[in-house]
Picture 1 (spheres, rainbow, N blue to C red):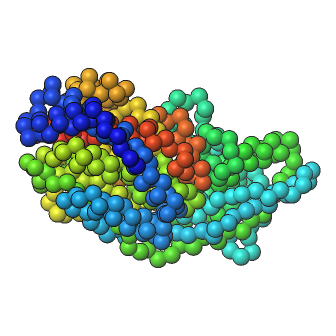
Picture 2 (picture 1 turned 90 degrees about the horizontal axis):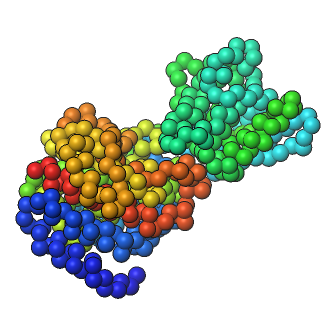
Picture 3 (picture 1 turned 45 degrees about the vertical axis):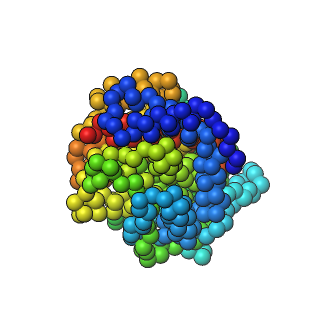
Length: 464
């Protein structure tokens, strides 16, 4: 990409370099923030191309897969080319579950023609075996309705969980949290009552033809039955047929294999701190994604943002006082082994972690930065809200993420933080084939990157 000189960018970076070797006062933070935003927005096409390359070359990056390991090498080389102080791999032992590439089901009813629909096995599900599954469909809205039924009412049938995300919830993550238990625990709840399989309505606000997958768990001592997702549009069609009194059966065959565990890796890049090299600030996202998806918003974009935060520090000539790490965590989607391994090694190596920031809510327009309590904590950061207000960013209490959460066990005073973008459309793409780079706006992604860099810079100074 050709870059035209941008006067505000040059002035901002000059101010950064001029102030960079002195202890900053609050009034001096403004030019640093401006420099980060100017550079991030100037480089927005570069960042988006990195995301596009990652998703194009290594889609379906489920832990244990060849695509996941290819993505490990890709991001490692990306950070090595940035001339960081270190770029290296951290071993993680991960599960390796695999499905057959194409999965379909046949709906059969007394009053309608047979209909073939796409399905998607839930992560960790058993397969049907070569003989497949056939059963009459029993619709329930969710786990609570299933609990009202006796085993004879369920035995031998395929339970269809059709609880939709509540569209009236302004916070879509709350709506997701209310609906997702049917996906996670539905197979065991139905298997305990004698069901032969479960269909689960995709946990998304969107009405589309994409089945959305996600992890599920089996409870000990309960028969393990196959679990598959269907799209929201197919769920609506099926529910209408059942509501009319029509008896509908389903036939499908899935081949899901749980391979032996294997070694994968977290990918880590570092800029060594100028004053406190033994104290760590982590910024990261998770590199793995589901095997039906390119994983752009979840969470390739978060990984590129973490890499870009280090790139901004380098480009603007800022040496952080604490060591700054970008971490591409492996296995967030299945068993969170990457975050656990990172925290375990940090503690075992005697490291000191002062703060960690995660981006794993999509890379839409940023709205807020969540900050938890800790040695630095929300109250101290909130005093600098005026610095973020011009960029339409709110500092709000509560922060963290699945991958950085384990750090709290070994470092109770750590401040955990998160990027919080607009969440209206996140679950439209989540865990589905629709999560493609063309659904990511380069400017929105880099506005988030700049906000993250500003928060990291501020915390780096407050942690003195």
